[in-house]
Image 1 (cartoon, one colour):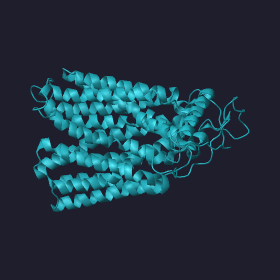
Image 2 (spheres, helix red, strand yellow):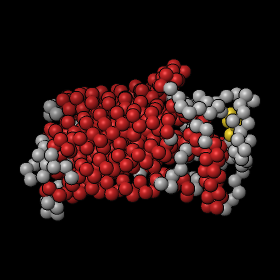
Image 3 (cartoon, one colour):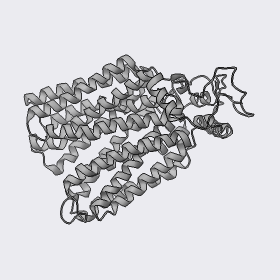
Image 4 (cartoon, helix red, strand yellow):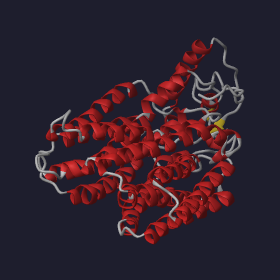
Length: 499
């Protein structure tokens, strides 16, 4: 069949409908950031007598953290495959429901095994979210805005981290909440917010691009026509038409063998790029965030219950990176921005290590250095998710995101802590300098790989960046189904400012 639906989606100007997509799909990362931060900050309180939970601090920071990471990795791979096969909407509703239920059950944990089990299931749900959400966002957001929107959404994790840092301060205050209640309320709040997002998501449609290749072109046409009506009513203009068309041969599914041959054979240079970006950012973040509390307390005598304030400042710096730099990924371009953010963050961390080694930093100035590093690193790390989402064919998109996310999460969540916990926990300046230097070196290496291999995907349709496996040459495909493509999308819209 021949269709103009992808081009019609890409030619849309930014509208209130697109904000609905951002809110419905993107805000879950705020929840993820909130929950991960809260767990780390209240670990000591959970291990105290009277918390209502018989668990040790080591079980929380060690076993529970490892189970969460394992759940996220397995969830990404499991749900990612199902997302490509059964659709974006069905899976992003299911994965959020899993996350919601697991978080709510964590709040009523009475035994250590219960807490550990539902930390695993929480990770299992959030891992599936990464695959389902990023693929849906990139297929629904116009090419003109895709980079900045994706970066800001992935960077919103740090808004949740700010909230989690401040919320944990309240939860730890026994003058406000009993010891066995405060931590439960933080998890319960996460479940309530997830329920609100789930209700909003009901209004987010299935990806028309996914529907097209699975033989459901009439549904795709109905969805896109409805979107166009909403946008025209919102903007008060008549959308232009386009003659850009895509010919595809519809299929029910793509085998694992085809996915592997596509990602690691046909696009092996892009696979190297994805691998490098995820590994680089995973180790840089672990070099800083994993031991930040220990560094502040051991070297600068910052009280344990005050480190949350410092982490909140770092999290703000993380969020402002994608927020302020995201637009440049669509204008200056992917290759320049990805490589420069990786290289700058790595070089700044080398500089921080040098200053730390000379003993000229205090708790405040070290935090300021971390903010500068992570301002660029956060934009780079968010672009890693954008990159693997857009540089592989649509039929493999969710699975590609899942694979590289699982790879990066496993590297950062397993080998990272094993390495950096020993280095930052010794209390020796030289060991902490080495930890910073390892993270910086891997980030710089990833930046050099991006300079050589990054794909110029800015403002280009997804189908142009990576040709769908179902695409066929013009003239060899059957005619489009009746009613499909009667209104085509015009050329890319003029710049309308930041969404």
